[in-house]
Length: 282
Image (cartoon, rainbow, N blue to C red; front, side, top):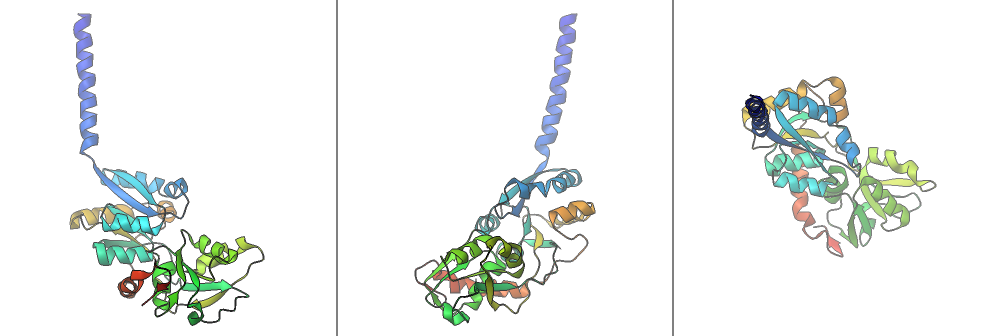
């Protein structure tokens, strides 16, 4: 009698475990890509509550995948490995124009950022043409303010070398140590990091006249219209503190990327030999 009861309990447990396994295995997995400048796990922490919210709303397993620079992010986007992407503007333009990603919502920010090229305050460099034959720091490919706009503005010059900084702060570090004479980043990034360099003062050599649009939350072209709408609704239904932490704006239309996409397409042929020494930008 005891043996029969034991067998019955075992069968019941097996059934419950099997049902749970089937339910878990049937859940769709969504890969969410985010770009992090050397923040490691801290970048993932910002999205923890959103992850929980999306899993509840979409009945899916959400896998957060950080890319620690734009190069890694571009590779993931080109392969369409990410189902949802929280992209800065340059990356968003690439995702839309080259990988057919669909923008759903804008990232936080007023879209008034500018790309600049800076030098040391005492540098004899007075205009962009003075950078011919000099070493210049750029951001990673995929950065609007650190790569696409500055390369566009440096068209026609041959640099001694173009160095690609892993972070905006590294651009200023290289200028500070004399490894390069100038570097590209955004105005906000200059203001954020300039106080870290003690007595070194930086001067804006060139300020691009175009506003850089804010980033975007995008969805993979592999998602059909119904799935795209479900993801949009899930993102928009998140509490305000969750959207603020993840850095996007709910119930708002994506910004216009037309001009930035044109810049990206124009820069691609200009930058074909950018890793050579010297580096001709034409």
